[in-house]
Image 1 (tube, rainbow, N blue to C red):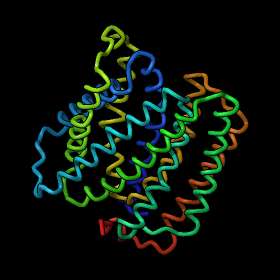
Image 2 (image 1 turned 180 degrees about the horizontal axis):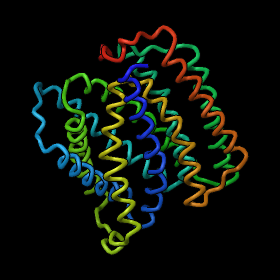
Image 3 (image 1 turned 30 degrees about the horizontal axis):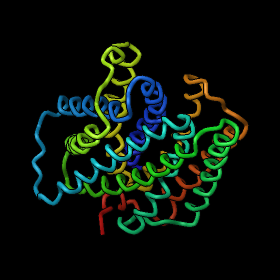
Length: 308
């Protein structure tokens, strides 16, 4: 494993550990704010933080590249997080966190058709099957034992599809040769632009007194500075170094982190079915990651991935 791969894996681990706990922070904030209000708070903070770190305007060499940034902002910021936040109003944080982990399948399927060097092998599907079995166990337990609304699960699946599309778009953006912080900030900008009409339709009337509470301030700062500003940079860096498919394997770790933190902070139960589902999900991660990192995949793939 070379230095770039180590840096890519480290970026992926940092991202997923933080992202795995964002479901809990969002669930707590949803008691006081709407899904759209939370999104606007966190991404305004994230945008400002990235501007502070690198206060240089991104000059795009080709106007057609703006379409990719706009698409990334719409998919990776506006649509994905809106679906995720609304899903959390219907079901538990642990169920949403588990279902989001199916995103690598959609990423792999899309990358197979649109990215050079991103090829699927049989063991990838074996790993995904094991992980999917774990996801089904946890989701079924939520519907039958904990009486959760299945609409939340459907919204979470939709979010996973959207995130896969964002990962592929991000891989294309990484070939433009711009600094990761600047490209992430441009993505945030377009995400906020698309949030404006959504906020106009849904209403933006946050409870400012609730916002002043220390616990809410800490959760919003965590989402804005950590989960948004820092993690979007580390995630995009991981995609750049490892490729869309290999990086997306780390999403399999989200349910393990989320379920554990949900039980600890929110008091959500970990039943035997949930425990078995976590084991299957981790097993799927190991099988799929072994496929993505070994076999016939050439090391130069890390540098040569591009849209066909």
